[in-house]
Image 1: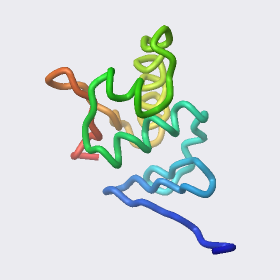
Image 2: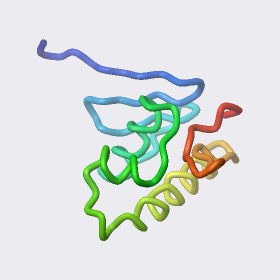
Image 3: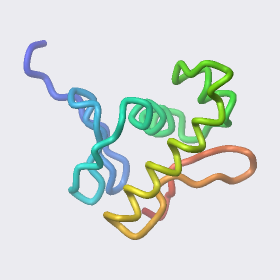
Length: 100
């Protein structure tokens, strides 16, 4: 459909699939394409290990360390907006902070 807007809302986070960006607490996060793919995957999967993110987000195996760099960038952007990390790492898996 032309003009359809696909939004996914999780707490105070809104993923805008048409803009390939996110709003956190109503503020645009200005995500890079890689950051968007990671955040979108974590929202849809609820949690994922680094191997799962490499596969699902289309990263080359040799760039697997970049995932943690991108997650740090997402968290910096979220902390500037809402003073909290958006993505947490527990039990060898990344997940969206449920207390956001």
